[in-house]
Amino acid sequence: MDLTFTPRQQAFRAEVRAWLEAHVPRERLASYDTREGFEQHRAWERKLYEARLSMVIWPEALGGRGCDLIDWLIFEEEYWRVDAPLRVNQNGQLLLGPTLMEFGTDEQKKRFLPRMASSEDMWAQGWSEPNAGSDMAAIRSKAIRDGDHYVINGQKIWSTRALFADWTFGLFRSDPASERHHGLSYLLVPLDSPGITIRPIKALNGMEAFAEIFFDDVRVPVANRLGDEGQGWHVAMATAGFERGLLLRSPARFQRTAQRLVALYRAHRATADRDPAIRDAVLRAWADAEAYMLASYHTVGRMAQGAKIGAEASTNKIFWSELDLSMHETAMHILGARAELLDHGKEASDIGQWLEGFLFAQAGPIYAGTNEIQRNIIAERLLGLPKS
Image (cartoon, rainbow, N blue to C red; front, side, top):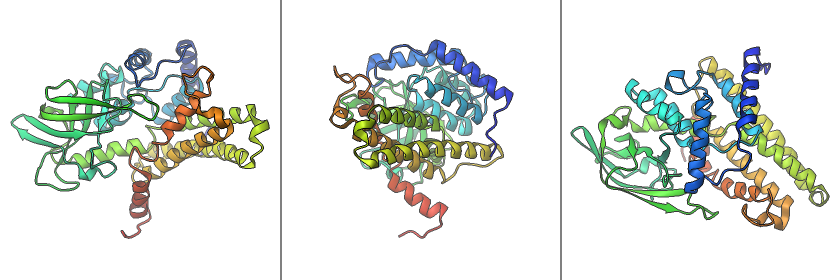
């Protein structure tokens, strides 16, 4: 694998670095799990869009820059290097966006993608239901066809940032007699539709990061269906692939955490070295983050030659979620009792960011499909093992 960057790629890196260093907010934005922080992050997304840096791999006509995946990896490295704000519209931009590219009509692409790139429209994900979390085939929310509309009834839960978003995308059972993976349709639903009720769910840190969405005779145009009727499972698996694979969690995110962990260890080495396991964990974290970066470049190279990310996305998901968790657990061990200081605490300084990251990392092995389910997929689809 040749990791020598071309002059064009080096020029792109220099441009991105210069722009970010000039425009990244000097003060941290408020949490995007608050209304104030959500709008601050939306404004930041607009700045990225105006600089043609919001979605660099999208076509220019649809709000992007027309770059390839190598450019995207370069952009991510520069973005995380300067600790730029977290991307608040990632459900739309990184999950639904690529799915629209693949399955959307020309009209849908023109209608949704530019507004998604600029964050004029913010998106929530509507997968999970009270009895259908990782097992999306157990979805029961119904979308019954009535002329040129669907009438939706049911409930979605654990919808990230649905409290503040404008739209949600999700699977609904359009054939009430169907079971499991059959008879599902993939719909795009405006969250201000009559009949929708949204209730917040507090996360471990007390923020209203999630919400449950109730649908009571909500009418959605058939034009808002992505893909064919009853073929929603096929479309959703493409979205899940993007979520578990490269786009949702770039390697630069974990490389930056590993760098911060090394710095934390060095700052507290006198006490950290009392437990030799801590030094080993820090070294392993740095090596694993670098390995994930190299594997990602390798995958992108294969994709450039026509390969597709299939079930192997599950290996990515397990790796990055467990890496993130182990890095934050190591930070907690280094900090000891001080690790319990909340981000907004008087004595927290920048220590509180580690606690925030630790709490969020707990969800990593759960969202995007639990790691137990991912191991089943690997066993059956990659290794060809029989079902138990």
